[in-house]
Length: 91
Image (cartoon, rainbow, N blue to C red; front, top):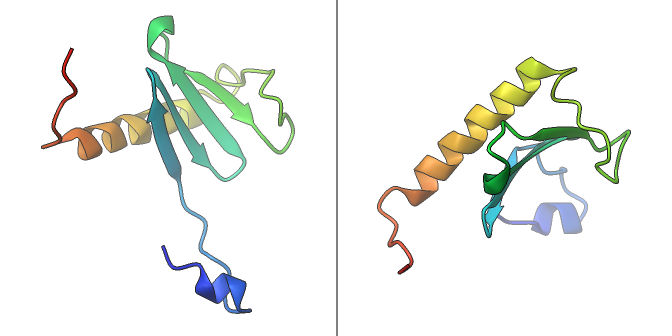
């Protein structure tokens, strides 16, 4: 990603979803919203509004089920896309 326009007074970068995975934990960020999924929890993840809860203390997935499901689906699609054809780590 070229950040030079932002650094040199050009247009701001367009908002985009972010995804990551590390040691059995997966997360998605979409604007102020963040979904965290921990493999050992066997649930659909915890949803946080970072603008109102930067410490990620209050799970809002029950209050915003549509957003939680949409973010979970996008996260799973990303995981599938990035793992397709990838070399798996040895056990």
